[in-house]
Length: 583
Image (tube, rainbow, N blue to C red):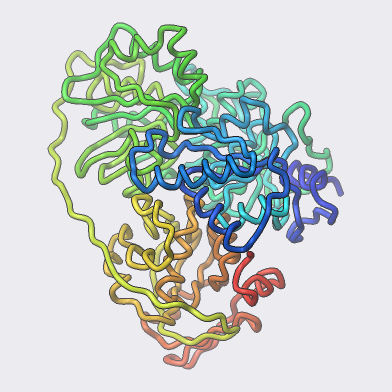
């Protein structure tokens, strides 16, 4: 039986067989820490007395807060700079741009290679046929110290895009169509391979746009066949083979709160908007900047609105300057920011206020991700056209007059309290907390405004304060409680804090129908007990007394006198759990 692309890449970087489902150690070619996770990586290395495997393969990228405008971010960046000087590590500092783009453009990452980063969109490397994975700080520290880290070889899905989209559609519209088809968890745990006439026509910039949103479908990675990379064998075995019809595709848009809630732009046309954002690792490339300039040339942003434009790298920013695009942006009334992640990081360009309606070219619009506003996701052209119009529209349908912005109503965030440490028995007993929801993302679990917190003792009080209906969870939960949730729990960001906050509160276990791929790793690596259990939400009552056996794979509901089967710990999970964590 032939091998898929992901198996071929892993085969080059591991000594074990790359059979699907097998857990193997994979050599990592490029090892990156960003400014929000970098300080914790340094902390882990120092606390555990670990040295660097190879400084030449090790990098810092300061892309979350390139202005250093947050005191804790600035402090973390300085910790990383000092460590880099001591160990001869290359730093792409606050003037460089998005790390995943830099490693592509600088030739640091190569087709067929492997890269890990504290960036949940490191799978953007699929655009060049390389394997990229976002990870928490313990994973990255392990890769820095040992040059390798464990992976479970994922099954693959062969995705064929059928037909060619309309001239109005962009790669962003195509990936939004894929989100409509696969949903938030349709590729959960899978590596996707992309094929078709449209795929063959894409530039690198277009491939980056599509690859960057694998995370929003729950996918490990979306891989493009690339010269010099790994090609799948003709008889490769796929878990699924899916065709996505994009023939004649028109511009699409995702409604607020869910990247997968995709509709035609026409379905929400004339919705008044307050602001727009163009940038992020999904749409901050040169082709995006030129397309936006074509829309804005000779036009003005509608009165009372603001359009924020952030190129993905400093080199792209300079090219925009040399080609006269910056002048076009400024003459239109746009704000142009320094290269970086922008709206995806708290405190940076792209944040919104309560009641604000924004259109963004980013990859996520989770509730609270970019502030308190309502975020629509669309192509850069649709964003630019909508800000000229003052309401949602496409680049071929400009208005005669702008609409008045909607009114805003401010809201007040909640916080709160305490934690106790948690021991690691192989069987636990506690009250059930049943949350009947799928796709609870990391911003709902632990919002990005707290990302600069590095002390676990502080983290518990912020747990779920961005999950509607559970804002008081941290006050009401008891040490030893057991969380029962739905599918794709922990989707979204790679932040370790979304795991550590539960440890801070003393949660005994989290049982879900499935977990976000990065979240699953972070929990296992930090000895937070997580297990897979199907169809439990309707069977277990809130506050039922449960006993959970991680080795036997059983839940006993003592309140109802019922027993249920769950997936037991793997040997790797058990080993890491019993020694108190990966490090």
